[in-house]
Image (cartoon, rainbow, N blue to C red):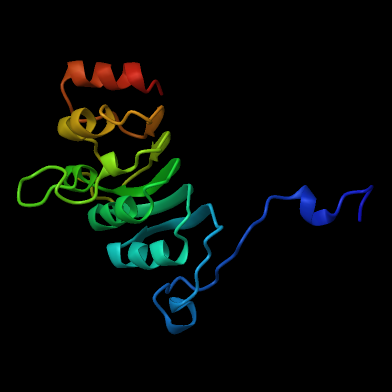
Length: 175
């Protein structure tokens, strides 16, 4: 006890998981229902990793992780209660944001399933692929701008969209 405070009360609770193979035998049946925040280093997580993490930590509200299209759709499916999402690296394309399958929007889990999402941060793409990591006109108009709960979006790159759509984006989500 330090001056009437217990040392644990001075810090936020931090959980450390040393294995990143979330489907492995030791972690397969583990569930951390009270874990609300999870941060992954600057690695790209695939859809199968996110499915396993969703079973492991079903109550996440804050997530910092790198995702591709399949990982993003899995995150939208598993963590509909997310409040804050920080994506870095960001290899998600319009297909992932809007849940496009066979040319149909919203036919798979997508950003509109995150009903409580208030804050979205979009980092850089993984590697040197300059074609990834862009918000498109449709992903802004049909994804971000229709989300009623979304209050803040920060992105490293301006959306690839018309001037009018970029202005709408900038007006709603000032950088």
